[in-house]
Image (cartoon, rainbow, N blue to C red; front, top):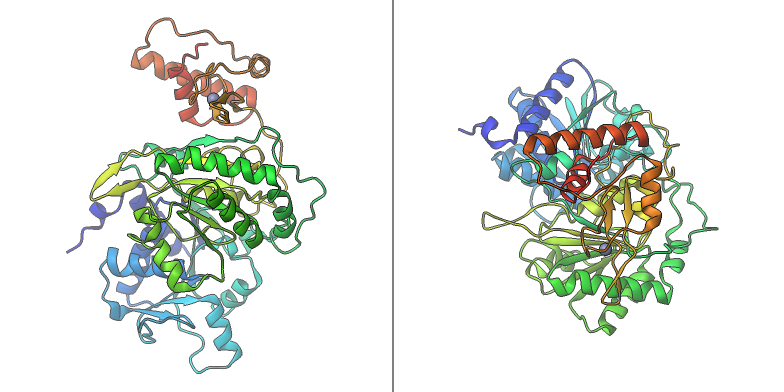
Amino acid sequence: MRNKARELRDYQDAGFHQLLAALAEGKRPLYVLSGGGGKTRVAAEVIEQYRRAGKRVLILVHHRELLEQMWNALVDDIGLDEASVGVIWGQDKKPRKNPDAPIQIASIDTLLTRKRMKRPGWMPAADLLVLDEAHHAAATKWQEVLCWYPEAKRLGLTATPFRFDRLPLSVAFDTIVQGPSMEELFKHPEYPLTSPNLFVPAKDGVNLKGLRRSQVNGRDWYPAQLGVRMGKKAIVANVVEHLLRRATTKGLRAILYVPTLKNARKYVDAIKAAGEHRVAYLDASTPLAYREQLLKPDGLLDTGEVMIVVNCEVLTEGWDLPSVKCVAMARPTDSPGLYLQMVARALRTWVKKGDILQTVPVILDFAGNVRRHDVPWADRAISLDDDGKARGNRMPPTYWICESCVDGLECGAVNALGWTTCSVCGDRRPESVREVEEQHGLSLRAAELPLTTEQREELVQKILALAKQRLRRDMPRAFAERAVDAGLRL
Ligand SMILES: [Zn+2]
């Protein structure tokens, strides 16, 4: 017999019990956990509880990767009999239709089509609705399906509880159950996520002045317009050079995000012209068979036959390949959700044949996303009613970007405020950064004597408190620790 407590990580077990309690109280919880933390696994346990109690569960997903992820969690991880799970999916090639099964995984689009065509049994019975990638829940088509089930209990899952449109998530949920932060997952003894090195190697950034924003796509910029800016020769050359030198030559498999298909072709050509032919591109129209061959475990990317996948508008949700250790963003976005979804593709710890491979992920930002949204592990206030007005606020200084040149390549490493030297190339920080630090009361001197564990902890706490007081925000603990280790003394 399975033992749940042993199979779930400590925080997953805590999340599982919190969710059950919230549902039992009649609440509609949204479970928030960073990508790679294993929220599908937690949801699968909740679903299994309901199934055992004789209830029917309907899981709503909006693309194929999410369907497969949920199927694997239920059938492989939990060990459910395939007869208890059905799939409602217009083009599901596998024989998984199983309309009498108590658990149904359904495509939102397929459900809506069936209703429109008045197919018999278009509305599967459900006592519990589970919404995967539930930050879409405020969208019209999701709302339509939710309206069919006024009495059903409801559970949402997301890594990025930021609206992609202008409606608050409180229309679908009434409480948040929050798992550990990205930073806590970096430090968890089972290493679900690996802390990355972050580079912003584009000193002058990308000029997005005058670009129009879409009214439908979360008010993000129009991809076609972004594509024109990101397709400029100098930008393409810079991206390709950094990508090849920082990732490909070091054996890191990479995903390069670009705004448009036209960009994708341009970048693929430039990468090939630079002598690297292990590159592929992907978009929503790529044939499914090739897509699978490229992306599956032991597929072309996993084995390294392809080292770079250039893609636009896919590979942000529900797909993970732990051997991907570099994410390069040539795709500016104003959506913190999209930013975090992109970055998260490189953070899942790579475990091969039971061994944890200590490869440090590399995040390359050519799109100004780090400056726009802060470092990925920054604490973000989340709320179901957040109206998103705070987005795009100027960054309080918690880090500085190294502008040194190493072997003709701009360093661009993101360093914690307080580090006197760059964590990657070792160069001293620029004077201008020192002035900012002094403004904020961080006086620096080199470490004189090694610290005891208690002294180190005391110093870390002091820095965190100071950061909170002076910068009015929480500094990631890892930053404070790394600053102390790099010689920061107060
Ligand atoms: Zn540097």
